[in-house]
Image (cartoon, rainbow, N blue to C red):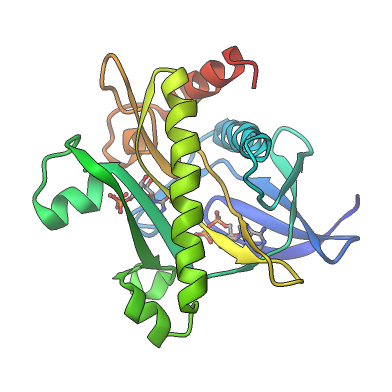
Length: 238
Ligand code: ADP
Ligand code: UDP
């Protein structure tokens, strides 16, 4: 597979065209951002960790019958994936209160929710990715009712698989963000990444943050923390 010209450069990844118009080459960057770019740092080693963690998780999801854009890991920081027309929604699943949910609703962080809650955010940097509901999604023509239901169903299914996976490595899945898109034939597929950048993971015993909150909240260094998540996945044989 041949890497061609740059398609898009985001905050955490670069996407390149390839010799196959339906496939793209993703390069994970050593850049960390938060607060919609308000915090920005180069963190050596972050790209390779997130690429390895995402590759292992997407591979595991496919073994569990969950299809995604992921085809294969190409190198330390690179992946080959199916090109998607990304639906501009961040689909967030919450198992316990944290972050913006805790702030908005005044619920203490870590409080377990009786049932997982699925939320939608409009992926639009200029608007700071606002929280939106299903009627907004229909109004904005982002997705139709059937697609919204499919997104929620997929998100809940993925949640169950990930809760079980992380439990096996002594991590509690507090919440996470997913992105979906459509392939050239209109199939809805999971895209983007699943890593400590996009999930909240708490150590089951110590309750320590094992995710990007370490960076956002200036708790410590993310590389050793992300490395620990990868080491635990490796120990599972993933
Ligand atoms: P951001 O755009 O928020 O800065 P990234 O740096 O992670 O985020 O860039 C990755 C971009 O690529 C995101 O906008 C994401 O929606 C998009 N993307 C993820 N997977 C695919 C895919 N398979 N095909 C096309 N675009 C994708
Ligand atoms: N998240 C993400 N990208 C975003 C916003 C959120 O990956 O642009 C993830 C975040 O890591 C967390 C979940 O989505 O696992 C919920 O985030 P929240 O709404 O609590 O926002 P935050 O407190 O991070 O601003």
